[in-house]
Image (cartoon, helix red, strand yellow):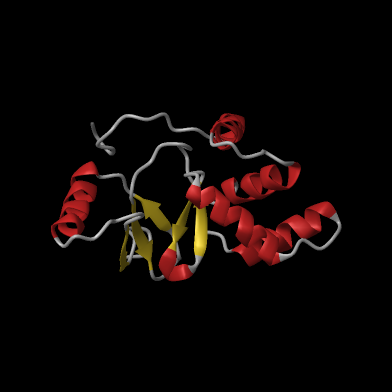
Length: 154
């Protein structure tokens, strides 16, 4: 199936906001104004954004300080509910362009420009989970990050 090994709908703009809201509500959570603002700010970043970046931008937008700890809590909720993906090595986040679609995080992370490309591969996910299972380990959220140099920086 080309870039992805399974089918799902990629969203952007208002469609992404609507899909994220619907997914969070379906998970039994509320879509508050603050959560919407954090998700909107996260979604406008093409590269992974830190909670501090998001908090600073929201503080400027709202005209009052937004605490990074509040943003971290919301981002953790988003990761738990598949609305955001966390790049562990840089403690930064990307909006999931297909909220509600559960899959493992596989990233190609550029050491020069910081770009993180999310890759879906059911074959890699199955292999990693099988390795964990063979060792009686219950994999909850596999994350694979491949550090290197992207095509734009070579």
